Image 1 (cartoon, rainbow, N blue to C red):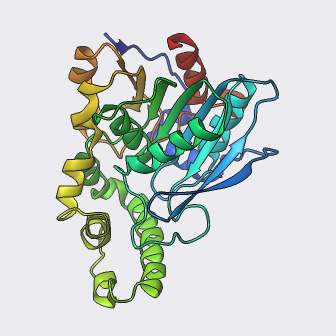
Image 2 (cartoon, rainbow, N blue to C red):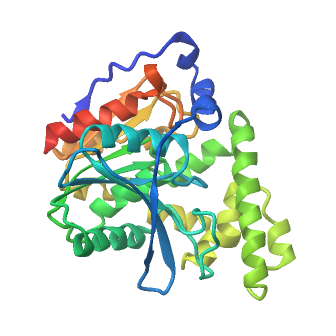
Length: 320
């Protein structure tokens, strides 16, 4: 304990990890869902855009949602989770990480897998300006790593933070990077790289003295992007130093807030080090559920409600 046996058993087509991933990322739609945007100022003079959705019933509970690499608060996996949480008595604050809200952030830096200072800023904003007595966090992929790092890296987590769930988590960033560089993941890697390079070009227009044309040409793989930009912009020596310091795996033993990791065996983005059985077995607050199917942030479910959206309600209600 707490290793949880998973009962997720999707229709046969969705047992294929790639199909599950692609369907959720491209074809799934969430209609008729309203969000209201709030901009908050950060201590370093940058900003974050938060997209709020409110439960139809008055509540003292709020769930913070954090998207994955090159996502935003309008992705189907965020909207679906927000809708499910709203329908079960939770208000929702969906974070758009820096550069991800449709507007370039002000600084040379942007977001990355370990930037827990931004999550902390959102939590402090909620504590200081809202009236919620319980705060829950749900992160996906990069956002899942960020969530777990936040909980375990040694800060005093506010007592209002009640529980967390992390879905499709690259607990070891280097392990995940190695998987993404394999031929099985070429289509995903190409798409990620295009989006990241486009943002790098946008940064170059604002900070031409820091990003050269040669830097952009040197970005052949996702690791190259982290060598050229992520590491340099955020105070790391190189990509490997960034992966080492920001992987949540090393922080899992220190987590004292109930937290559930939901990862799929057929998630092509995750290496063996991303399934932290040893850490879950030795920490009574860390729950690990490894499903056979689900892909990467997939988890198809009937009536357009995914398994992870049902699972988060059950977990949050159980550990309160």
